[in-house]
Length: 231
Image (cartoon, rainbow, N blue to C red; front, top):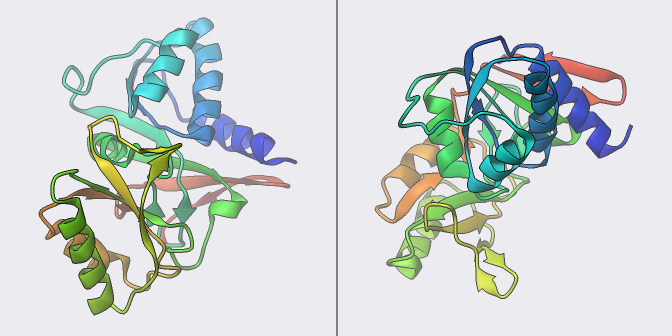
Protein backbone atom coordinates (compact mmCIF):
# COMPACT_ATOMS: atom_id res chain seq x y z
CA UNK A 1 0.00 0.00 0.00
CA UNK A 2 1.51 3.35 -1.02
CA UNK A 3 1.34 6.55 1.03
CA UNK A 4 -1.76 7.91 -0.69
CA UNK A 5 -3.64 4.63 -0.26
CA UNK A 6 -2.81 4.67 3.47
CA UNK A 7 -4.05 8.23 3.79
CA UNK A 8 -7.25 7.28 2.02
CA UNK A 9 -7.74 4.31 4.37
CA UNK A 10 -7.46 6.59 7.40
CA UNK A 11 -9.86 9.07 5.82
CA UNK A 12 -12.39 6.32 5.09
CA UNK A 13 -12.30 5.17 8.71
CA UNK A 14 -12.79 8.74 9.94
CA UNK A 15 -15.73 9.27 7.61
CA UNK A 16 -17.65 6.58 9.49
CA UNK A 17 -17.79 8.97 12.46
CA UNK A 18 -19.50 11.72 10.46
CA UNK A 19 -23.24 11.85 11.06
CA UNK A 20 -26.04 13.60 9.22
CA UNK A 21 -26.48 17.22 10.33
CA UNK A 22 -23.00 17.61 11.82
CA UNK A 23 -21.12 20.89 12.11
CA UNK A 24 -17.75 19.72 10.87
CA UNK A 25 -14.26 21.21 11.11
CA UNK A 26 -12.30 20.24 8.01
CA UNK A 27 -8.52 20.11 8.19
CA UNK A 28 -5.67 21.03 5.88
CA UNK A 29 -3.00 18.90 4.21
CA UNK A 30 -2.70 15.89 1.95
CA UNK A 31 -4.44 13.43 4.31
CA UNK A 32 -7.24 15.89 5.06
CA UNK A 33 -7.73 16.37 1.32
CA UNK A 34 -8.35 12.64 0.90
CA UNK A 35 -11.05 13.02 3.56
CA UNK A 36 -12.56 15.99 1.72
CA UNK A 37 -12.85 14.00 -1.50
CA UNK A 38 -14.57 11.10 0.27
CA UNK A 39 -16.83 13.47 2.19
CA UNK A 40 -17.87 15.15 -1.07
CA UNK A 41 -19.05 11.80 -2.40
CA UNK A 42 -21.23 11.32 0.67
CA UNK A 43 -22.59 14.85 0.36
CA UNK A 44 -23.47 14.19 -3.27
CA UNK A 45 -25.41 11.13 -2.07
CA UNK A 46 -27.43 13.26 0.37
CA UNK A 47 -25.38 13.59 3.58
CA UNK A 48 -26.16 16.91 5.25
CA UNK A 49 -23.18 18.64 6.87
CA UNK A 50 -21.93 22.17 7.37
CA UNK A 51 -18.18 22.46 7.09
CA UNK A 52 -15.76 24.98 8.58
CA UNK A 53 -12.45 24.89 6.70
CA UNK A 54 -9.12 25.44 8.43
CA UNK A 55 -7.47 27.15 5.45
CA UNK A 56 -8.22 28.94 2.21
CA UNK A 57 -6.76 25.93 0.40
CA UNK A 58 -9.24 23.58 2.05
CA UNK A 59 -12.08 26.03 1.43
CA UNK A 60 -11.33 26.11 -2.29
CA UNK A 61 -11.31 22.32 -2.53
CA UNK A 62 -14.57 21.99 -0.56
CA UNK A 63 -16.34 24.55 -2.74
CA UNK A 64 -15.04 22.90 -5.89
CA UNK A 65 -16.42 19.54 -4.73
CA UNK A 66 -19.76 20.87 -3.48
CA UNK A 67 -19.34 20.67 0.31
CA UNK A 68 -21.43 23.39 2.05
CA UNK A 69 -19.24 25.76 4.06
CA UNK A 70 -19.80 28.21 6.89
CA UNK A 71 -17.40 30.44 8.79
CA UNK A 72 -16.43 29.79 12.40
CA UNK A 73 -18.21 33.04 13.20
CA UNK A 74 -21.45 31.51 11.91
CA UNK A 75 -20.77 28.16 13.60
CA UNK A 76 -18.65 28.90 16.69
CA UNK A 77 -19.28 25.46 18.22
CA UNK A 78 -18.55 22.34 16.17
CA UNK A 79 -19.42 18.69 16.65
CA UNK A 80 -16.29 17.20 15.15
CA UNK A 81 -13.03 18.17 13.47
CA UNK A 82 -11.13 15.76 11.26
CA UNK A 83 -7.56 16.75 10.45
CA UNK A 84 -4.14 15.28 9.76
CA UNK A 85 -0.89 15.60 11.70
CA UNK A 86 2.82 15.75 11.01
CA UNK A 87 3.60 13.70 14.14
CA UNK A 88 1.53 11.79 16.69
CA UNK A 89 2.91 10.41 19.96
CA UNK A 90 1.39 7.73 22.27
CA UNK A 91 -0.26 10.43 24.44
CA UNK A 92 -1.96 11.92 21.34
CA UNK A 93 0.21 14.99 21.44
CA UNK A 94 0.70 16.29 17.93
CA UNK A 95 2.95 18.41 15.80
CA UNK A 96 0.94 20.19 13.13
CA UNK A 97 1.55 23.06 10.78
CA UNK A 98 3.56 21.54 7.97
CA UNK A 99 0.93 22.93 5.60
CA UNK A 100 1.09 26.35 7.23
CA UNK A 101 -2.44 26.39 8.70
CA UNK A 102 -1.67 25.69 12.36
CA UNK A 103 -3.37 28.78 13.82
CA UNK A 104 -6.72 28.17 12.15
CA UNK A 105 -6.38 24.42 12.68
CA UNK A 106 -5.93 24.91 16.43
CA UNK A 107 -8.79 27.42 16.70
CA UNK A 108 -11.15 25.06 14.89
CA UNK A 109 -10.01 22.02 16.90
CA UNK A 110 -10.53 23.90 20.18
CA UNK A 111 -14.04 24.88 19.07
CA UNK A 112 -14.96 21.23 18.47
CA UNK A 113 -16.47 18.71 20.84
CA UNK A 114 -14.14 16.07 19.35
CA UNK A 115 -11.10 15.95 17.11
CA UNK A 116 -10.14 12.88 15.11
CA UNK A 117 -6.61 12.78 13.73
CA UNK A 118 -6.00 10.86 10.51
CA UNK A 119 -2.49 9.85 9.48
CA UNK A 120 -0.34 7.06 8.10
CA UNK A 121 2.10 4.96 10.12
CA UNK A 122 5.07 7.16 9.23
CA UNK A 123 3.62 9.95 11.42
CA UNK A 124 3.62 7.90 14.64
CA UNK A 125 6.60 8.63 16.93
CA UNK A 126 7.62 7.83 20.49
CA UNK A 127 8.78 11.41 21.16
CA UNK A 128 7.80 14.52 19.21
CA UNK A 129 10.40 16.61 17.45
CA UNK A 130 11.82 14.82 14.42
CA UNK A 131 9.47 16.91 12.30
CA UNK A 132 10.47 20.58 12.60
CA UNK A 133 8.09 22.40 14.94
CA UNK A 134 6.23 25.20 13.13
CA UNK A 135 5.97 28.42 15.15
CA UNK A 136 3.69 31.09 13.66
CA UNK A 137 5.03 34.57 14.32
CA UNK A 138 4.14 38.18 13.64
CA UNK A 139 6.33 39.71 10.90
CA UNK A 140 6.98 42.73 13.14
CA UNK A 141 10.03 42.14 15.30
CA UNK A 142 10.81 38.86 13.58
CA UNK A 143 14.50 38.78 14.52
CA UNK A 144 13.77 39.58 18.16
CA UNK A 145 11.13 36.85 18.24
CA UNK A 146 13.53 34.30 16.75
CA UNK A 147 16.16 35.16 19.38
CA UNK A 148 13.54 34.76 22.13
CA UNK A 149 12.55 31.35 20.76
CA UNK A 150 16.20 30.28 20.69
CA UNK A 151 16.65 31.36 24.32
CA UNK A 152 13.53 29.52 25.47
CA UNK A 153 14.67 26.40 23.66
CA UNK A 154 18.14 26.61 25.17
CA UNK A 155 16.75 26.88 28.71
CA UNK A 156 14.80 23.67 28.07
CA UNK A 157 17.88 21.87 26.75
CA UNK A 158 16.73 22.05 23.14
CA UNK A 159 18.96 22.94 20.23
CA UNK A 160 18.80 22.87 16.47
CA UNK A 161 18.37 25.17 13.53
CA UNK A 162 15.41 27.58 13.51
CA UNK A 163 14.67 28.72 9.96
CA UNK A 164 12.21 31.14 8.42
CA UNK A 165 9.92 29.21 6.10
CA UNK A 166 10.18 30.14 2.43
CA UNK A 167 7.77 29.72 -0.47
CA UNK A 168 9.97 29.68 -3.54
CA UNK A 169 12.03 32.86 -3.39
CA UNK A 170 9.57 34.60 -1.06
CA UNK A 171 8.91 34.32 2.66
CA UNK A 172 5.94 32.03 3.32
CA UNK A 173 2.89 33.93 4.57
CA UNK A 174 -0.01 32.24 6.34
CA UNK A 175 -3.69 32.91 5.65
CA UNK A 176 -3.57 35.25 8.66
CA UNK A 177 -0.66 37.26 7.28
CA UNK A 178 2.00 35.78 9.58
CA UNK A 179 5.32 34.02 9.01
CA UNK A 180 6.50 30.63 10.26
CA UNK A 181 9.71 29.66 12.01
CA UNK A 182 10.50 25.95 11.65
CA UNK A 183 12.41 24.70 14.69
CA UNK A 184 14.42 21.52 14.09
CA UNK A 185 14.84 20.37 17.69
CA UNK A 186 15.08 16.67 16.81
CA UNK A 187 13.49 15.62 20.10
CA UNK A 188 11.11 17.42 22.48
CA UNK A 189 11.04 15.50 25.81
CA UNK A 190 8.65 17.95 27.53
CA UNK A 191 6.15 19.25 24.98
CA UNK A 192 3.97 20.87 27.65
CA UNK A 193 6.85 22.94 29.03
CA UNK A 194 7.87 24.13 25.57
CA UNK A 195 4.28 24.98 24.65
CA UNK A 196 3.85 27.10 27.76
CA UNK A 197 7.12 28.97 27.32
CA UNK A 198 6.47 29.76 23.65
CA UNK A 199 3.14 31.36 24.55
CA UNK A 200 5.01 33.84 26.76
CA UNK A 201 6.91 35.29 23.78
CA UNK A 202 4.94 38.32 22.52
CA UNK A 203 5.81 37.80 18.85
CA UNK A 204 4.64 34.18 18.83
CA UNK A 205 1.10 33.97 17.49
CA UNK A 206 0.73 30.19 17.82
CA UNK A 207 2.82 27.01 17.73
CA UNK A 208 2.33 23.58 16.22
CA UNK A 209 2.19 21.60 19.47
CA UNK A 210 -1.39 20.34 19.78
CA UNK A 211 -1.85 19.03 23.32
CA UNK A 212 -5.09 17.70 24.83
CA UNK A 213 -7.03 18.39 21.64
CA UNK A 214 -7.21 15.03 19.85
CA UNK A 215 -9.89 12.56 20.99
CA UNK A 216 -8.21 9.70 19.12
CA UNK A 217 -6.13 9.03 16.04
CA UNK A 218 -6.85 6.73 13.12
CA UNK A 219 -3.57 5.42 11.78
CA UNK A 220 -3.39 3.58 8.46
CA UNK A 221 -0.72 1.07 7.55
CA UNK A 222 -0.18 -1.85 5.20
CA UNK A 223 -2.57 -4.05 7.17
CA UNK A 224 -5.36 -1.45 7.41
CA UNK A 225 -6.41 1.22 9.90
CA UNK A 226 -5.99 1.15 13.68
CA UNK A 227 -7.04 3.53 16.43
CA UNK A 228 -4.72 5.17 18.94
CA UNK A 229 -6.15 6.47 22.21
CA UNK A 230 -4.11 8.37 24.76
CA UNK A 231 -2.06 6.14 27.05
